[in-house]
Image 1 (cartoon, protein in one colour):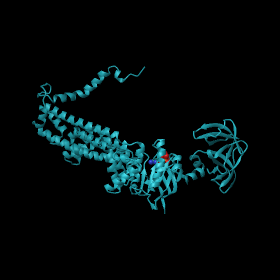
Image 2 (spheres, rainbow over the protein chains, first blue to last red):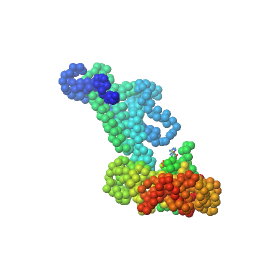
Image 3 (cartoon, each protein chain N blue to C red):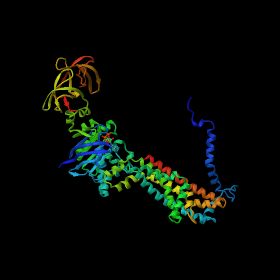
Image 4 (tube, protein in one colour):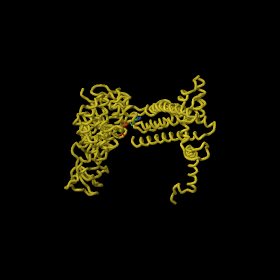
Length: 268
Length: 352
Ligand SMILES: Nc1ncnc2c1ncn2[C@@H]1O[C@H](COP(=O)(O)OP(=O)(O)OP(=O)(O)O)[C@@H](O)[C@H]1O
Ligand SMILES: [Mg+2]
């Protein structure tokens, strides 16, 4: 009997549909209703961009604008610093030969991926309180850098692993110093991994809620905490508009990261 | 001091593995020198230590009299052609070739001009603006050569540069490499495990095995007067027979072949007793019965330019004989008895 394609298994179609609905129906509902011309979140009142204008000009606009600015600057700074640290870590892990505690270092770098986020959130808050650090912008930034590192590390290390050591040897052989060999040869070859890691870290920072909520302190908001605060007073359609905007940014970045990675894989 | 390279008692260990054991050799200026040996004998390790990619565990490496054993690779006037070429994939061909010149601090017009000349030398001028991925294997190989030669190194190191090419291209590149070496006057140190490549290209060859240098000499020395069993066996094809030594005087020995026939041969050993004798298949000729040794023909193998005749001496010792496949050649019939002639001194008694 010939093996049948999985597509012909009984109820393949219905199970696939069910999965798709569970995954995407909420997102689609939010996206569609963000264009609803009605203050109700359940009744359709025609197509409009009203709630998008509300996000930028409505009563909550200043709050969202401040939160968005915080989110954006934190994401840029956290992603930049985390990417730099992750690049250095990848070089140490993959190019420094064997050293004592190499596996331990690897575990440490990737720890934030394994530890439940709530535990990190609580621990970070307690730590900052214990050392008498005032919670605010800086604590959010530090926390974000920490949990962004493994996300930046993974694509960077994957890329570096695929780069043969002979390129650096060739550069050194042709009279390049260690630094020149890194900047002129290794870094350009690593670039797709570094950019992809940066974008990933950026997105992870941009939409973090749990840790941010713990360490942000009073009066500081990022976009996710601002949305959460607003929702607590009742869901209004402007929340759907702002969520759709964030979704758009996320999709854009993830797609970019994917495309850059794929392009990088084609040319070593 | 006009040796390009002096390797003095160089030892290399990786943890418990000893890759090179107290290797000493000298390479003269303007020489095409080949390191030849089977896989894992330490050729690459030695080359990488000359280039500076690998630390020397013990010993010294001198470049024109200067000890370079502890210098960083960028401070050694030595360049490498890598086995997989290692062309920088994000740079154009011309930028690859100019890289070393740039690192040496030459200004843009000078290095562009010089890189252009190098590309001309390897017949790739029209490919200057391509990326390495847009070249064939043979073209990439030439770019790698041009890149390594552009900064005018004192010594060029080549680690099996032809092994990734197909047979036809490999043979053409041999001649081209040899020509390039003569034209530039740069000392080449060439690594290969292909003995034919080594014989056709080199001024001198160092035959290596298991971290030791077994013999250093011209291709003719290595082929015709191997010092030991390993070298005779590794270079070319040979018949290795265990024989009893009757007498040794100077570099001549009298030995008794299996079957009782006595012959005179050159010798690499001065100890009497039982040793291996090497007889090259092409040094044996088939002659009419009556004079000298006798043998039975087992099989005749057609090789195109040559015929390989497998025979057995009285007593059962197998030998292979190479005869030219010329128009007048009489092909012996399997099963027939024939005479074998061995030129005086054409066999060689080997040390173990
Ligand atoms: N980094 C290393 N760590 C441990 N052992 C090594 C290392 N590099 C080489 N060796 C060992 O040293 C020995 C010599 O290796 P080398 O690469 O010089 O061989 P080679 O003659 O170039 O062989 P091939 O013809 O296969 O390239 C081998 O036994 C190899 O296993
Ligand atoms: Mg090798």
